[in-house]
Amino acid sequence: MPNHPSCYLRSFYINSPIGSMVIKSCTRGLHAISQSDTIDDSNFAEVKGKCPTVKHDMDPKKLEVSHPIISDCVHWLSLYFIDPSLVSTLQMPKLCPVLTTDKFQSRVWVMLAQQVGPGKTISYKELAEVANNPDRVSMNEALED
Image 1 (cartoon, rainbow, N blue to C red):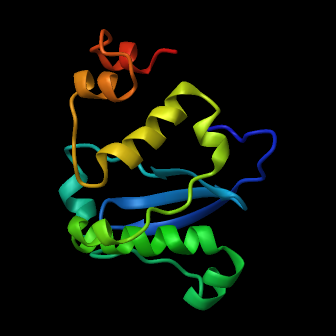
Image 2 (image 1 turned 135 degrees about the horizontal axis):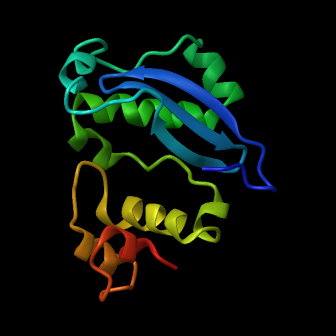
Image 3 (image 1 turned 180 degrees about the vertical axis):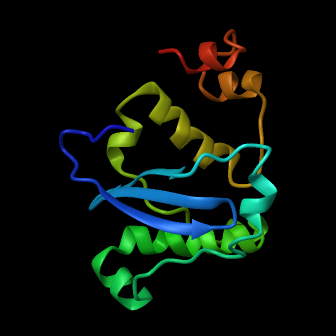
């Protein structure tokens, strides 16, 4: 996701059970979480075994003080990788308000996070319905503005 003109994004890299990940946030909230490695079916199991939990090089107390949004996200991801049901009792990491007003794809991401929740999957048809575009049933159609 490109930088939004009104947001100064910071990137924080972590190791996780699914490989290296990058968390991007500004002072107002989370912008993106993505894998920084190329993961596919041929190497997923191998990568998964490398890191049984979320790890990073920063002191957790310093991280909490200097980057509270990233700290919340790291905590949330740590619990998610242990057991996705554990995050159901936590508040989702704070999302930047720009995501709810910016690109359609960002708005869909927010809707999925708020309405579908972690560890669950939905079809493209269901995604189209969540995005109030019930006639668009392919991925490209569901995400069109």
